[in-house]
Amino acid sequence: MKYIISGGGTGGHIFPAISIANAIKKQDKQADILFVGAIGRMEMERVPQAGYPIEGLPVRGFDRKNLLKNVSVIIDLLKSTRKAKKIIKNFAPDIAIGVGGYASAPTLKAASGYGVPTLLQEQNSYAGVTNKLLASKASKICVAYEGMEKFFPAEKIILTGNPVRQDLFDVAAKAKEAYEYFGFSPARKTILIVGGSLGARTINLSIKDGLNILTKKDVQIIWQTGKLYAADARAAASAYQTEKLVVTDFVSRMDYAYSIADLVISRAGASSISELCLLAKPVILVPSPNVAEDHQTKNALALVNKDAAIMIRDLDAASELVPKTLELISDNPALERLSKNILQLALPNSADRIAEEVFKIIKKSNKH
Image (cartoon, rainbow, N blue to C red; front, side, top):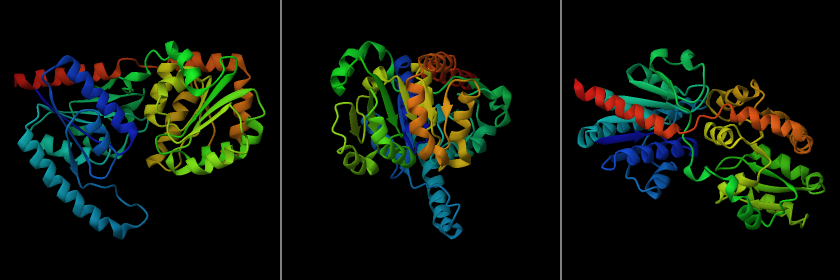
């Protein structure tokens, strides 16, 4: 069988895409899988690292602020459409899977044009523009949140959850190694601060301004800053020489970090939320305001409304994030309640469930 998986742009799209590919491979050892991404985006690097071939399209997002710049965007879109048709024709897939992001639009449109069945995976609680446009031709749409009927035809929707990185399972067993890895003590509580793979300016500035208060408390902190903010964060942290603070641009052993985290501070990307649900981690979410349709706030509210997370608006983070963090980390009943409630929202084995839908669609289309 031949499978095309298309989409990308951020880690939030790429990790689920690779997880789906791995789940397909697990059940169909002979699977021939080809990814289609956007040139210059992180999938062009991450997908080959995961062992899969990828083709790149010169596709980009529309510039909503400067409309004149969109002339070249439209030219690139036309080129991408032509290239996508060529890829579909030459590769002749049995199915095309779209995970959202620029590249999936021309790829899945071309697939539908050649009569190839398509499946969509929507990670967010507020559907992306690309998936909304592709929904009418899709055979099935796999979602991670309830109430997605407002975006997609109800009969096509399947609640599967978002696939997460495989190394995050069974993190509790790694706690002993994790404390040694970070040079931390099991006697203290640990706060994990993550702003996504690129970092988060507001979270970083709020933590930097609150270091004098945070470092006085009997807590340990893993602060992932992202590359852009690492030097500034390290300079600020150097004034507080302490074994209780680890500053890093990227946590390569996220399984270790999660295994000892008593509280997490995070943006509200769909992949991050899915991981936190499965790991039952109490979290303070600071949604990024710089995303399409403010979808991170909607992701966060889906948890807040079920008393499964605390949300602080980006605008309020400077004044509220550090005080709220210190209040929550010392409130054991609140941490336990958040942990219990967020676990209720976890949807395990998402990649396997999506793979099963993929096989059903292929089987059904081969009968015709």
